[in-house]
Image 1 (tube, rainbow, N blue to C red):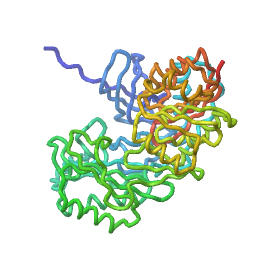
Image 2 (tube, rainbow, N blue to C red; image 1 turned 90 degrees about the vertical axis):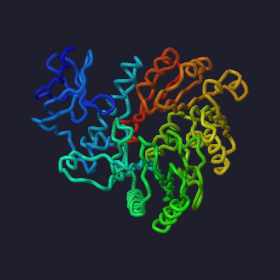
Image 3 (cartoon, rainbow, N blue to C red; image 1 turned 120 degrees about the vertical axis):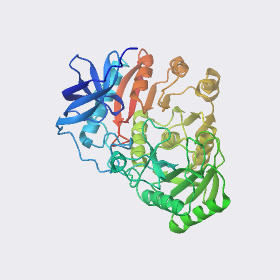
Image 4 (spheres, helix red, strand yellow; image 1 turned 60 degrees about the vertical axis):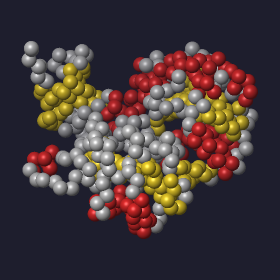
Amino acid sequence: MGRKKKNKLFEAVEIIDAGAKGKSIGKAPDGKVIFINNAVPGDVADIQTIKKRKSYYQGTAVNFHKYSNKRAEPVCQHFGTCGGCKWQFMDYKYQLEYKQQEIENNLRRIGKIELPETTPILGSKEIYFYRNKMEFSFSDSRWLTLEEIQSGKDFDNKNALGFHIPGMWDKILDIKKCHLQEDPSNAIRNFIKIFATENEMQFFNAREQSGFLRTLMIRTSSTGEIMVLLQLFEEDKEKRELLLDNIIAEFPEITSLQYVNNSKGNDTIYDQEVICYHGRDHIFEEMEGLKFKINAKSFYQTNSAQAYELYKITRDFADLKGDEIVYDLYTGTGTIAQFVAAKAKKVIGVEAVPEAIKDAKENAERNNIANTEFFAGDMRKVFTRDFINKHGNPDVIITDPPRDGMHKDVVAQIIGILPQRIVYVSCNSATQARDLEMLNEYYKVTKVQPVDMFPQTFHVENVVCLERR
């Protein structure tokens, strides 16, 4: 049996660019690309490879010869271990530059389309504490840091309430302070962890599928409302009521306190009953006087302030005069549909999740919007010629699909009806570019506007306007 090849160490590699999924890029002496997980463009470092593929390496910087002037000092004590904010060590100005670069590269390289002059990316005013939803996991066997392991100490209390270690489905990093959601998020999470530990409530063990406390979700809104949802693996009425009653006593400002009993193999709640213990079973978000009801299962953009900017850009690109029929594909809870309704004759929203459509209808009624209709079902099966004949040929289509983009049958249906204008909102410019290539024969891209919804991460939204040729 042959010897296993050792991973290579490349010395003094200059980091030349930022790539996909938060990786930076260097060049190996043999000319192959190295994708590096902990460096900033402009750094010069020794790179220890961890994987070798036919055309590239994956590696980690183990010794720095020079630090880039594009670096920033991370503010979070968990940076480097927690995988949530991979770009926190890069100055925000450069984060925006690389996000814009990625979008333009994807649209040109994958989409093979001629681009107009791209509008500079719209950065976020708040680069920390901008998220309105956070989800945390409980564990009775928390991830120990390298310093803790090297200390040789025994740790009796291994309870954690925090985030999954990247690539480790059963390991949770205990979070003391997260910089993504404003207070009282940190205070609520820390209180629950301390109270549950002091009262000997068992934290979840993913390998053994045992324990009492499983996950915690905290949602906030720009109106100041707060939702807390605890997911329990085993029902224990006495412990549950003790914990929930003390959460209410400690945080009377909580609008909605709910729980789920979930003993199945995964922790998704969409097929579970959510039980309201205190207050309402929902909170409200508000935008330009429109109120949107958000329950535990609702989808809503996680950066409320930037969502408002994104929707304004979408409405501007749609360029409605008041007599158009608009289709809002992948409408979610109908936020964009209702946001543009005042400038349209009629808006038709289609979404796969029935609960989201129920919310959309309730929100439209609450907001006294009479010119919207919402339909639930698989987009390929709902968005058909018969459906279009019944509800009218759209003058404008707004589409905001999930990360996978639009199914080719949906693109084909759009080509079959050829609306005058398409506004394509995307959280993944690679799949957006793929879809734009299919539309390129019939549509010209006239506007491109990147929007940064997620500072400190490599994720970015993009809005494209297409006009019929």
